[in-house]
Amino acid sequence: MGSDGADLRRRLVADLRERGYVRSEPVAAAFAAVPRERFLASHAKAHGLDAVYADEAIVTRRDAAGRATSSSSQPAIMAEMLELLGAGPGTRVLEIGAGTGYNAALLDRIVGPDGAVTSVELDAEVAVGARRALAAAGVTGVAVEVGDGRAGWPAAAPFDAVIATASALAVPRAWFDQLRPGGRLVVPLRLSPLLLELQVVVALRKARDGFDPVATVVGGFMPLRDPGTPDGDDGAAVAYEEADARVAAPMVRLRGPALSGLIRPARRRLLVAALGFGRRRRLDLGLGPAWALLGYAALALPEARQVALDRPRTGHGLGVVDAVDGSLAVLTVGPAGARIDAWGGPGAEGAVRSVVERWERAGQPGVAAGRVTVRYGPVRPAGWWCSRRGDQWLALDWAPAVSGR
Image (cartoon, rainbow, N blue to C red; front, top):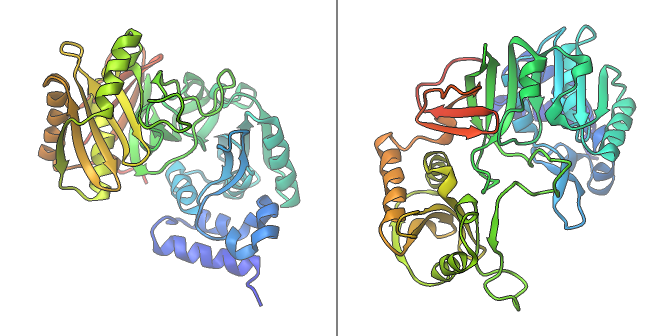
C-alpha cells in the first residue's frame, strides 16, 4: 500500500529540515499542510503521489519548441526562498509568477488570514489553472492576477515582501516602488544574459535608493518572460548559428554583445577561428569550483565584450573578444573539466587569465559568497563588479555575508 499525502508531506518536511532548507516553524507547517498533489493533479495521476513529493522540479507546461515555460519548483529551493523572505502572520506579499499556485498556497498558509498574497502571472491559461488548483485546495486568501509581473501589481500595493519565481537580469523599478521601506525582495538573479545557468538567488532589503544585500544562495529558474519577445529570448545577439547550413544542429555557436558591432566578415572570422585549434590551458578544478569560476567571470569580464561559445559536445563557455587585436578567448566548463581556449593575439587571453588569477587570489570564492547591491539612478555603487542594467546598477563584492535570516 502506498503512502498517503499527509505522510509524504511529513517525510518531505523532515528531509528538508535535516538538509537545512527548512529552518522555521511557519515554513515547516506550510509544507506539512498544503497538498502538493492538488497543484500537480495530472502528474499525480500519471506517476503517483510518491513522484509528487520527490524533491525535484516538475515541468507543467512547454511551448511549441518543447521549452519549459511553467513548472512546480523543487521544494528545497522553494523552502530556502520562503525562509529568506521572512514572511509571517499579517504580511502582504507580491509573488511574481503563479505557476501551479503551490508556492502561493504555501505563502497563504504562512501569512494567515490577516495577510494577503497577490500573484501576478503573464500566461492567462496558467493563471486559470492556478486559480482552479487553489480553489481545489481550499485556499481563499490568494488573488491570482493576469499581467506582466515586471510591473508588479499597483492596485494591491504597498507590499511587505516580494518574491519572484522566475529569474531576472535586473530588478524592475516597480518592485522597488511597490515595496514598503525595509521590505524584503527574494529573486533569482541571472549573472549573465548569455548563459541562463549562471544564476544566484538573492535576498535584498529595500533601502532609500535601491536594495541592500541580505543573503545569496545557489539556485536557478526559468527566465522572467517579456510579452514583447519570443519565449526563451534573453536578449543576446546571435552572431552566426550554424557552421554549415546543411547541418541541422550547429557545431559551434557564437553569440553576445561583443559581436553586435562587428561586420559579417569579422563575425565569420571569429566563428572559423573557434572551429579550429587554439591555445588551450586546462584548469585543475572540480565541477563545483569550475562553475563558481564561470559565474565569477560573468561578473568580472567587461559585459560589452562578452561572448558565449556553445559547443554541444564539449560544453559551454563564456569569454571575450579583444577590441584591439580581434582575438578571442573563452573559459569553458564541460564534461572534461574547465579550460581556457584562445585564438589570435594575446589580448583576450590576457583578460580571461587575469580573471582566473583574481578569483584564485580571492580564495576561489563560490558565487553564493557574493553580496549583491542594487542602486537606481546615476551614482555608481562600490563593488568588485558593477554593471549598468537599464535604470540601475548591480554591484557585487565578496565581503563576509550579512546575517539576515
